[in-house]
Length: 271
Image 1: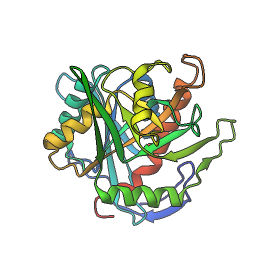
Image 2 (image 1 turned 180 degrees about the vertical axis):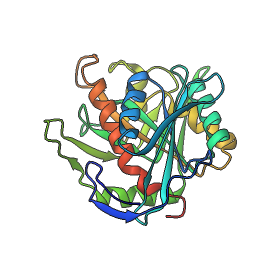
Image 3 (image 1 turned 60 degrees about the vertical axis):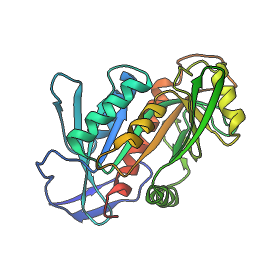
Image 4 (image 1 turned 90 degrees about the vertical axis):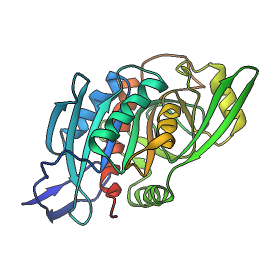
């Protein structure tokens, strides 16, 4: 089968690839938490090949599709949504994804709050490094978690291959950023939340903050099966410099899903 495919921001590629295998396995797992995040991911998957959905027992549906890498090898994607917000729910969904599909890489994608002065609503932050805090009686502890070095190289490749400013004809252009993301394990949706201020104080390079990545990181290090690493791709829904609101949630989720789809061809395990 010869095809020509174009993902936003990526050069056109044409190649001959085999039909997607029927085995229940994926090279890339995608994890979301909120319905708005999953809707955006499903829309991106439907622009890939052989999109379909199935259920893992009584749980939420798993959405599947695939893209080729630059050598024409299929990179299969399986995307699931955690049952509810929060780090523990995200950790359970991560374990279920690993057990069923055994992906080499898991991408946690969705919304975050921007704290770096350089990020704006609608921008996307990509990170292989997480700054977390555990709230303990009378103390807080900071953990810096770096993903596998190979994933860092793949992010380098990706950000070299695509424009850092993603131009869109509809006026929704946005910028890509790479840097640490903070996760507090507690809700950080309010731009004035104290945990957001604290995370940036302990690491002034933190670009964005969210809630669930700390649970995924804990599950990863407790026993990740075949997973070699995890990446975070977050669209900026709000910043510390604006009033709290949902005006940019759909936009930020869509941009994060688009960038996740663009990243998929760079994540073949044999790359």
